[in-house]
Image (cartoon, rainbow, N blue to C red; front, side):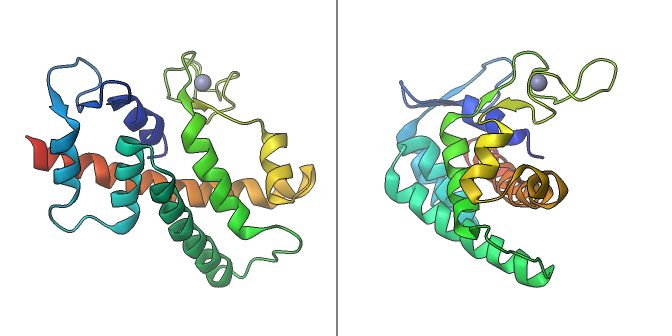
Length: 180
Ligand SMILES: [Zn+2]
């Protein structure tokens, strides 16, 4: 579900404040006021709500809320799965995800799939499906080294990305439901 994030970002046309829910063939557009109202309807989980607010308004406060929720999640995972945390900065992982959200774009080489026609990981995006920071930039940001990242932290980081990927999926379904 991770690939939903950059695809979802792509569905928001930030400049004109219009949402294209069907991002394959743009059939319908919504005013941002309608999207903002739709976010407040029903019982959208907090992480999906703030993710949506962030996409629409590009507001620092919303990204801060999202970062707080992600920090809670990563600390929860660390306790539940009994991680040896060492020098790694857990809240920095939440910050890193929010920073990634700001810059990630769908990989044009594999079109967001993360793999090539032979089934191997896409060379350009290393299997993520989007372009973002390098692995080195990521592990340095959280305070890990090359070995620790590849042995443990990359997978843990992916678990947190899954959490936000699920939130993006829920958000997308919610908007589809509310706007159509
Ligand atoms: Zn790719």
